[in-house]
Length: 315
Image (tube, rainbow, N blue to C red; front, side, top):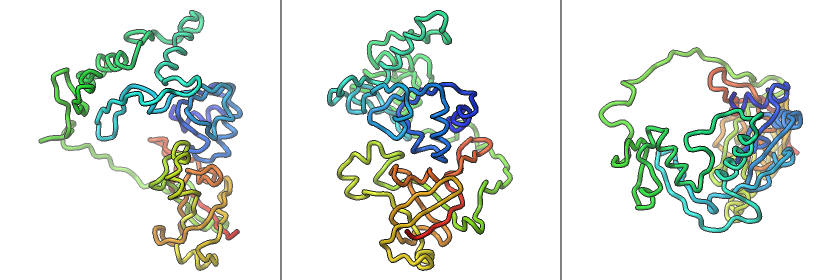
């Protein structure tokens, strides 16, 4: 199941436990009230995190993970560039790197013969460091076959696929021809959104991020510099709609959908067209996902974050 299928499965009693690592579904999943219900219904919730989050109160067990600055390993970005990171500071309290927590948990589960549900992987779970884990990845994953901590430590800039230990990596993925031919085309039929404006909810809500924050904002809202630039949730309203609502640029607005309501300061702007408002989900006091609908794309299972019907009122 995808994450968006797991939540309703928990509410239906078909999924009994969650192990959530570095994610905050209360902030990032659609229809927050429904997500609260799903987490409350679930028998057991384990959360592995670096900061308290909006999901934390629903966890039966909290495991303290280490942040990027407190561990050794690699990050691979969307440019396919594999980047080595080194430990800069010690972790606070009992926080541990994610790989260590997962390994220790796996060893405890596998030690109980009656509960053993998976076979130990390539090298078992007795890793000494992340270099060994990368060696296992290289042995099992052809596109990482030539990647090692030793090469990265020497300053090599590797972008997968790296076919063997002598391969320089692949800065440009498609040269001369595409990896799978000239292309693959699929005709599709237009499917309208699950919810469109009507008399009761006459406007469209579109959601997304702002430049200065990321996702549920657990880290970016702890940055003094970022908060100085963008300190609170804003609802972006077109100038024409602002005039109809009687906004003067400083009014707070209440945005309601069939699932919930939020209040925030209005930002009058031409960045959104008439009939639409735009909200982000970085701030728990006014998260757009209190409003969004959990209707899923039938193939990708992605929620319709970008379209739902709302009404806007001045506060």
